[in-house]
Image (cartoon, rainbow, N blue to C red; front, side):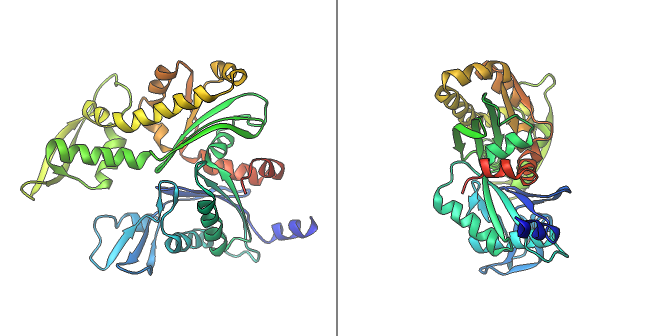
Amino acid sequence: MMLTRLKGLFSNDIGIDLGTANTLVFQKDRGIVLREPSVVAVRTGTKDVIRDGVGLEAKKMIGVTPKNITAVRPMKDGVIADFEITEAMLRYFIQKVHHRKIVAPRVVVAVPSGINEVERRAVKDSVTHAGAREVHLIEQPMAAAIGAGLPVEEPAANMVVDIGGGTSEIAIISLAGIVESISLRVGGDQFDDTITNHLKREHNLNIGLRTAEEIKLRIGSAYPLDEEMTMEVKGRDVAKGLPKTLTIGSEEVREALQKPLSSILESIRSCLEQCPAELSGDLVDRGIVMAGGGALLRGIDRLVSKETGLPVTIADEPLIAVAEGTGRTLQNIDILFRVASY
């Protein structure tokens, strides 16, 4: 115990929300200290990361790099797709926030609830090789619930829906444990892909993922808006190969998003159907809390409430709820050892 305390004097423990789209780092006693895209720029055909080619700078390169540089996302559907590049990315982020410290940090990492043992080991190994002295894993819906301020230790149901870039995590929590959960590999990235495919199919317009994300953020919605919106979109004509501009409306974008949204709603209903009767009664009053970037899609809380008949609220800061949850467990070791998944 004394050795652990001494290590704490020379180290700043950190929590990591290792997401498909973005990585957030929480530093003990400082809060969120890093929020950058999970993107790495490498020399084409190699695993060599170019100088300053991680995070925000790398994301700027997506779709605009010369042939000798490739911007890649080493995470796919919430799990590691490329071990070496993920390790390089994590090392860069850890060193960026943990400089001038003698002892390597203890790290808590949020992972999807549906990953298997091999994938868990890959995360622990990557973080260890990136410079951590000790690694603990916590399931993303638990981290999101803690970060959103839900009373997860109470003997009552708390339901959280965390829609990230690569996965949607749906869970019912009681007594600091997950009673029922579904990890669905549908998230914000699938929303972007759906918009891209729709424009190509319906308008012969080829756009990049950055443009699709902009459409989603500016006029995307899950529920009819009081005042519908339009947006001018620029891309390349599939047939002619020339630049093309068209105007698209929020109603059309909403229609395009129906398939991924339906998958999320179906999983929410399935999780509710599996919930024990005693806990179901709690949800009538407590409802559902939504977190993650997908929770910011206009009207998604109204859609979920309509489909489930339950009250739905958005976490105060949905984008950082998971990272906040990892940080709060660092500040309360008792909670960490109760909710950590090894």
